[in-house]
Length: 122
Image (cartoon, rainbow, N blue to C red):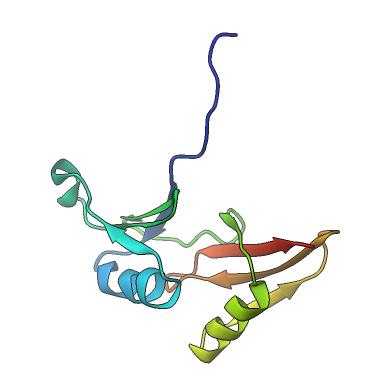
């Protein structure tokens, strides 16, 4: 084979129409992702894009909308206990999970019900 996968360019999460402000509050305001400009040709579709370093999340409008309950992105973080405390202080519910050997992890849902895994390797 002559092709190579280099990286994940972005993660697409679905959300209902009118999701943009709530997505900004969660991904930018609480998680600290920076909003990035969508290409002009895609703005008409709604949604909003975010980046944190080289990680991008694209929140796209899906109609009808149904949140992802099993499929999910997983983010490796540093200082997971600080993030956990920050989320709890912002009234974000977390679900502990100790089933992955060598990892401290939990799950959280975005404002639209999409599952997100957060982990730190120990």
